Amino acid sequence: MPATIIMGGQWGDEGKGKLTDALAGTADLVVRANGGSNAGHTVQTDQGTFKLRLIPSGILNPDCRSVIGAGVVIDLATLVSELRELNARGVDTSRMVISDRAHLVLPYHQRLDRLEELRREGDEIGTTLNGNGPAYADKASRHGLRVCDLTRPDLLRRKLATELDSRNQLLVRLFNDPPIEFEPLYRDLLDWGEQIGPMIAPAEVLVQDALAAGANVIVECAQGAMLDIDYGTYPYVTSSSPTAAGACQGSGVAPSQVSRVLGVYKAYSTRVGGGPMPAELNDATGETIRRRGKEWGVNTGRPRRTGWFDAVAARQTSRLNGVSEVALTLVDVLDVFPRINVCTGYRAGQSILSHVPALLDTLDDASPIWEHLPGWEADTTAARAFADLPRAVHRYVEAIEARLGAPVRYIGVGPARDQLIDRTVS
Ligand code: GDP
Ligand code: IMO
Ligand code: MG
Image (cartoon, rainbow, N blue to C red; front, side):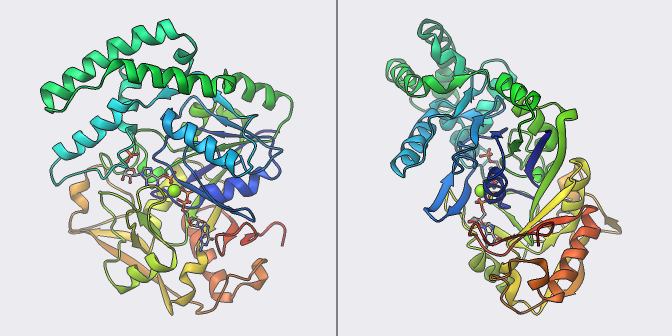
């Protein structure tokens, strides 16, 4: 059985965790493909709410094996504490697998993330300050330390000494910041390495063996395709590829083994951090969306910027990622509006754009072109079948399908596990 990719189609926080948990119920393996502790994936079960950062959102399904793929960058302190918290809540993590090829996020990456943001002075990316950018930069420039290095203390010592020396020079000379001590860090790494030791394995081999045996494999992305380093709003992006292509690369699944790409989209837009967002609402409507959708960051607590659904950005990510099915989440957040808008183009000077341009200045004075749709002003949270939803929701879903060129299969009407409509079942 081929693989399913679950990816975010906007700027992250679309509900990937909830969809991954839902599909993991019938899956054998969930592989997280990219990002690191910058992610925050919420899963709500009858045991409560879980906020996962590095651990795949399949972990709450006991029959499904969870794998951290090679494309993830791992901050070991966060991973170890996440494992501990899950164990304390009775979740079995003993069968988890961590790719020996995954790169490590080290304390100097986190420090540099913060210092580089400070240096941008007023033009910050608005990163989560988890060190992801500097860790991926080290990976690309071949200065990274990997999970496999933890299994060889002598090798680890040598590599860490070399890398820490050059990062300390940067910290001290360029940023006027204190250096990081070698011994305590080395000891921490050995300690964390020992704790995750039994989970370290060649994950791509496991994934390929599973696919060959006909297993149902899910690849879970972090972030969203508008934060992609190539096709997002660079430089206001993350440092990995939260795309269908990135999902393959980061998980060890070949493109020809993918049977479906599930694009998760919110029924409106949110974004955390800097960068253009033409459909943003800096008014009472935006505030209502924030309050109803509880739009504050899972990790950072930052208020998320809110706006109407941006069909320009969404159509772009749907096309570039070959989205074959859509999950439209948080539809219930729109329950109170008499009218709902969808951004169908950007008016920039004399021209109308139907794609997100590379040069972001083009968007400085851009204004959204709205399509107006009727609201439903009804509570959708108890709906469990498409037929239970008001006619205006059907119209909204159809409008989104037309823009994305893909069918909306799942509809989210609340954060709980059962607040998800699967149109092929109902
Ligand atoms: P992720 O990063 O894509 O996994 O998404 P987050 O977990 O960061 O953010 C999504 C938020 O919306 C979480 O608080 C979820 O519990 C919540 N959520 C997911 N689906 C729905 C839905 O259909 N309705 C409502 N009201 N909340 C939802
Ligand atoms: P999940 O997986 C929303 C954003 C940050 C910032 C930019 C770069 O929960 O959807 P980084 O720390 O990656 O260098 O920050 O990307 N960002 C996210 N926004 N959800 C996420 O993850 C995000 N991960 C990173 O806010 O704008
Ligand atoms: Mg999130």
